[in-house]
Amino acid sequence: MKFYLVGFLLFCISLKAYAQNEIGLIPQINSDFKIGSKWRVNSKLEGRQIFFKNPFPKGLNQKEFNRLDVELMATKSVNPSQAWGGGYLIRRADNSFTHRFIQQYAITRRLPASRIAHRFRTDQTFAKDESVQLRLRYRLSWEKPLNGYELDPGEFYLKINNEYLGILQDSKGDLEIRSLASLGYEISDKNKVETGVDYRVENVVTSVPTHRLFLSITLFHSF
Image (cartoon, rainbow, N blue to C red; front, top):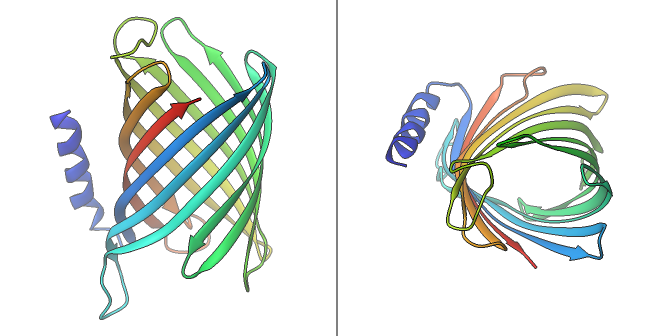
């Protein structure tokens, strides 16, 4: 764990060399509600706190509470490895609200000592005085227990995500890339916590890329 934190701090220092970047914290509470044998509702409360921002407007503090998201997703299992879903997100940022509608398809494959998942998403974002933003997303996830073949309460696990987002707004296309490496702990059958490094690069195509690095802390609970 010490090496994990040292690596995060070294990455923060090296990131300051980029032209545009942010360093911050993403806390999240994630809850699952199972309805019958096929339906599942997921609720997510997520905030974003910025600790360092470069460049930033002269005379303003680098530190700021950037946004607060509330997301609801309902999914239906087609079979044990596939599920369809849809949802809605509302965001509070810059004293205004943003609305997003989400559609997704997920495939999960269990390997002998790990699990791999593919998630395909489309979403449409509506904000005041802005054109509609359309996104096509693909995320690849890999999760592995650090003790044995199955994850049991009181054990740690490793999770790695890689996501690509194609963006279309005002007839202009762009690309965003996200990577997440996190260490999780199974507290009980219904509770677990994850902490990791979330790295994102935005505006890959249209302008100077923006690099964002966050310490992600997530609490999961299943009802």
